[in-house]
Image (cartoon, rainbow, N blue to C red; front, side, top):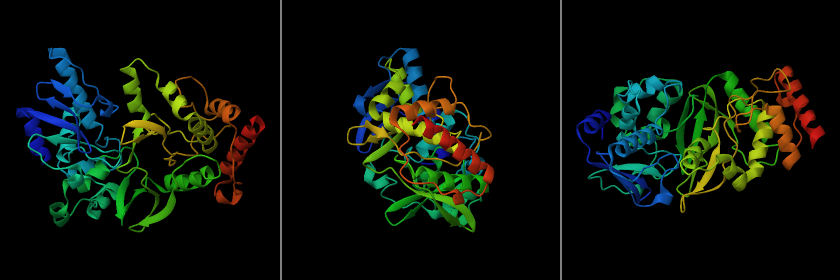
Length: 375
C-alpha cells in the first residue's frame, strides 16, 4: 500500500489494524481507539494499550499506536534522511501520524524484530512478507548510504519491503543493509573519522571477554565503510533499553533492576569498554536486550555494538558523563565501579601499532593503566 493511500486511509477511516508478532495477532486497534489485546505477553515493549472505551483512553491508545509505528521509521537527524524519505514520497513526515503512514506502507517491517502491522483485508503470512525470507534490493543502498536519488528504473523496480530494512533501522549515521546469500550485513559510513574509530574500537573490544559485534573494513562504490553481520533472526530480536523503560514505567518497575538481574556482567563490561574507548554515544536507544521470539522474553544484553563515536571526549582520563545509569557520575567512576564488581577481564594484549594517532594511543593506555590499578 502506498504512503499517499495510507495517509488518506488514516484520515478517512481505517476500521482496524492488527499488531502482529510473526503470524500471531497480538492486538487489534480500531479507528475509534478501542482495542483488544489477544496476547499481552507478546506486546511490543514500547507499545501500551489500555482497556476501556472512554474518550481519554481511546485517544491515548491511538497516540500510542502512532508513536509505536513512528518508532519503526528513521528519524530526521539521520544523514540522508530527507533523501531517503523523498525517494518514497514522504519528505514531509514530521508527526507521529505521518510517520505511521510511512511504516504502514511497508507493514512496519524491520530487521530488528518480527513485529509487523496487518491492515483489514490483508491475508499475507509472515513468511510471505518477512525481510528475513526475501532479499533486499541493492537499488536502495545508494540512497541510504550515499544519498543518491533513485533512477526512474530503480523506482519502478523497488518494492516496499526493499526499503523497509533501511528505513526501519535506527541511528544517525548513513547505513544500509545488503544481503549475501542467507546473511545480511550492515554497512555504515559517516565520515573517515567515524569509520576509522569504529574499526579501531572493534579491535580493542575483541581483547576483552565480552560479547560484541565485530566490525571489519569494507568498500562500497569506492567508499570506505565498516561492515558487520546481522545479529537478529526469526528466532532472536533486539529491543533497546528505552523500550524496556516504557514497559517498566507502565508497571511501576525500574529498568536498571531488570538489567542487573538479567545480565549484570555485560552491563558492567559495557561501562568499562565505553570508558576505555571514549564512546559518548551509549544512549538508551543504543543498547538493550536480546529477546527470544518464541516467548518474547529478554535473555541477555545484546552484544556491544556501535563504536563510530569512539575516542570523543578523550582529552582527559575522566571521560564524559556516563549514559547507562541515571546516577550523575563520569565514565571513569562508572568504569572503576564496574572493575571492582566484575574485574577487567582482558584476554588479549592491545597492540600500540593499531593506533594512527599518538594522542589517542596515549590516552587509551592511560585509562587502561588506571583500571588495571583497580582490578
